[in-house]
Each structure stands twice: as structure tokens, then as C-alpha cells.
Image (tube, rainbow, N blue to C red; front, side, top):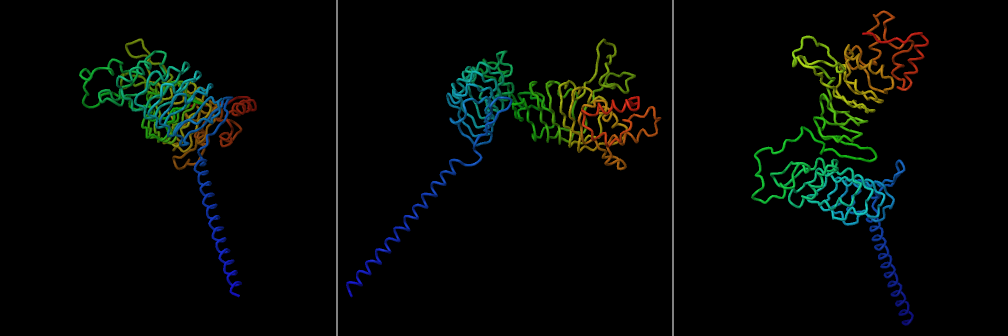
Length: 468
């Protein structure tokens, strides 16, 4: 019996040890699996992958806001445009982009770049656009850009440039006449006596002077800056040359906008007035967004009688040519939108406009879309100019032209108000589209209005026009 009992006891001991070993193995497996899964998640965290797409037969790589710190080697070789803005790149090493032989544009703005090695852009013989603004670059050599024979646009502003002798080659490079689109708004941050000076304006001799020969700092403001510059805004040259100035608390339109800009977004700022000739330097502009600014006045272009002391010019309009007294010169103040002959889209929604004075829209010959919603349009005689300008330019699609004041007309289409205004006029002088309710006319697309006008004219055997 003792032998049997001893055998049974040994059996139970072995069984308990076997269970302990099995439990330990299971625990190790679980810990290993958790380590593997955590490393996988860390390495392939969602949201970091770049997007590749094709637009007008050219391949783009969009890696904006992906928290990248370096250039990756697994990107496709046939890229034409690389967007790397708003990442955490600090150093651009030699040959970083050498495999992208077809590259035309490279956007590196809004990173943390402090150093660019001399051969960083080696091999980019087709590159035309390089954006390096909004970084932390203090010193860079001309040699960096010598590798780019087709470079046309170079943006360098909003970097803390240290204007000492090491920067001499770059300053000389920027001031070559053929490089007129290189570094136009880049300014010195140091030394104090040169702070605010543009790299294009500083002579190489000044930044390479000995300490004893350098000019002493001036008291107060040293550099006269424009009232508003565009360095707060972001520039995007592909696929459309765009200046993005949204939500920058601007109180005026920037005065140094590049003439190559096609799309200008000034929405959600604090611009209250649009002055004469406000956009004279951006005559290639096609899209202009001025929504949500609180705009109260747009200069229509006038002749300043009180300044010239002329006796007869009470209602001089922007399209009139006026002779300056005692001279042979023509004189007038152009409208705010003067010169925007290529403008196709204009967004004036969410402002404080009551009406347009005569002349505000006279230069917008090719306008196709006009947003007017959420303005306090006042339905009185002064609203007629805007209404009839839109009727005459039947190809313009517009919305939001609805009476907000006075209370008796609130909610009316402006066209309906104008119709009621002329109800007392003789029928042969009545200015509206015969045979159609004005609310129906407001809903017709711009490209169909011309056909409707002609058909209405044929039906009535005459096309009725406006007489004021």
C-alpha cells in the first residue's frame, strides 16, 4: 500500500509541474504577440501614408501634414510634383531628390529646415518651382541652386536670414536680372542694423564689411515696410498659382502680391474698404475670394471735384475721361477692381454691402460667377445699378441678391422690388423682361438668360430695355 501511495503522489507532482510550464508558455506567447502588434502599429500608424494622384497627365505626391522628418526612398520615380509642406523636415541632405528626374515643382514650405546641403537638389534638371518659405534657414549658398538650370520661381521669405559674409553668394545670385522671381520678399533677421532689409536690395559690400565699418543701428524703425505685405500668406504654384491669405487678420489687401497669381483668397479677414486700384498689380487674376470680411465700401472710381475745384462735375463716373483744369491731361481715380480684365469668379458674400455705386463692376468684362449672399442689401434707388448691370451681363451667374432692408421689402428678390418701383411708368418705357415673373428670372442659369431675352423679344416683337 505504501508503494501504491508513493506512486500516486509522484503522479500528482508531475501533473502540477506540467500545468505550471504550460501556463508560463501561454504567458510568454501573449507577451510576444503584444510586442509584435504594438511595433506594427507604431511603424504603420494610420494617417502617415502619402497620396499619389494624376492631374492633367502629371503625377503628384501629396505628403502635406504627414509629420515626415526626412525624404523617403519608396516614393515613385516618375513624380512631377511633390508637396511636402507642413512637415518636420530639418535637414535636406545631398542627393535627397536625385532619383526624381521628371520633377517640376517641389513644395517644402512650413517645415523646420535649418540646413540644406550643397548637392541637395542635384539631378533636378527640370525643376521650375522651389518653395522654401516659412522655415528656419539662416545661411545658404548660391551653390545649392546652381544645380537647377530651369528654375523660374524661388520663394525664400519668412526665414531668419543672417545677413553676414556667408550669405554674399546668395545675395549676388538673387540680384542677377534674369532671377527677378527669386526670393523677392526675403528679409534679413540679423544683424540688427540690417533687420527688415530685403536680400534683393542689400549690396554684397555692406554685408561683408568689417565690424568697425558696419553702419550703426538707427533709432526707431529702420525700414519702411508696406502697409500690408503678403509674407503672412501661403503661396501654392501648382496646380494653380494661388495666394492663400485666409484668416490672417488682414485689414487691407496686401500691396506686394506677385503678378503671376491666378487665385487670391482673402476670405475671413477684417478688410472693411476696397480702395481705388486695389488690384492693379495682379491683372492675371481669375478667382478672387473676399467673403466674410465685413466690407462696407468698394471704390467705384470718381473724379475728386473738391480737390480740383471744378465747377461742373457733380456725377462724374469711372468710365469718363476728365480734363484737368489748365492742362492737357486726362484725370480720374480708377475703381477698386480696375484692371481685372481676366477675372472670372468674385465672391463678395458675407459682408456688409448695402449697394454698389455706379462704376464698381465696369472693368469686369469677363466675369462669370458672382456671389452676393448674406449682405444687407437695401432696396432703394441705389440698388438699381447692380441689378441692371447683372441684367445687361446675362452670362454672369449670381446668387444672394435679396432685399434685407427696408422692412417692407425684406425677403423680396431685388428684381421684384425694381419691378414694383417702375409700376407707375408708361408701358412702353417699362424695363423688365416681358411675359416672365421676376422670381422665375432669378432662377434661370446665366447661360440661358440670353436665349430667353431673344425669345421674349421675338414674341413681343420688341426687346424692352431700361430707361431711368
